[in-house]
Image 1: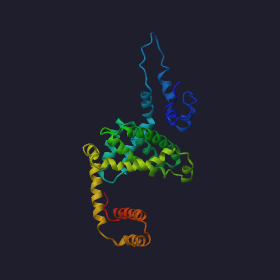
Image 2: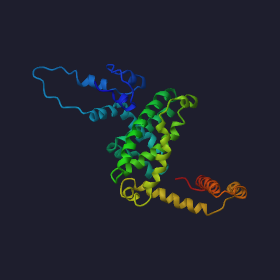
Image 3: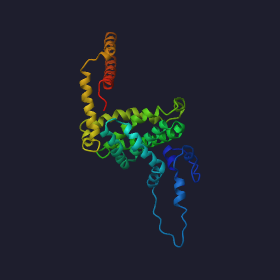
Image 4: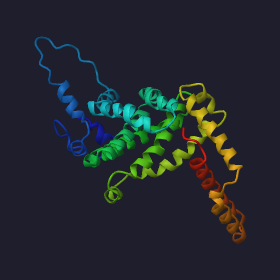
Length: 288
């Protein structure tokens, strides 16, 4: 008897309970046994018709795209996506093009659904725990798939991996706003969550030549171009002084007068540079 899809992904012992195993019942997840119940009990009259073999991956696909997951996808395209950027062009990319790419790469679709679930946990505080746990489980599945895909990076999966990294950033921010910080911090979270930092940093490699070419020629072209326009504007803002950031100038002078070790000084100045840039982006850049 096979493991249920949830138990298989979580690598935990399955009690194979019918019609839904215990672990799936606890986590409110779709269960392979619930699916098998509806596909294996059809009455037969006369000779049996040849049955098509069902492979594990096909069964998993049927489970993942349950009614609940379709609801999450609908929530993402209609509610979550418009909040990911204020630029209407990029809103359309998130609403339409990103899900299309997700249909080709399951790990990306899992990440999309995970973010939608965490968004629901924020919007529905009375149900936050259920949606938060579902989001965590979906992201763990997405992360495992993304790590496997990163072993074979190509122009075919550039966009999917790039989007997964971007969604990872949003997910990490949403995960910290689950509705109850004390209870969330007490949850046992897989150590793989620590890897989001490295995955997000890796996003930069996809937006620099020569890897950026495949993104520039695809549906994510507006995302890349608008991002570069913002970088250029930020560079212009950094070249100007502003009375509001005099405190940062004073801090920089103080550090230069006290810190003598070159590596440490470089780290401090780099941090100030990032803060300076962020301040200008917020207070001097027109809303997009």
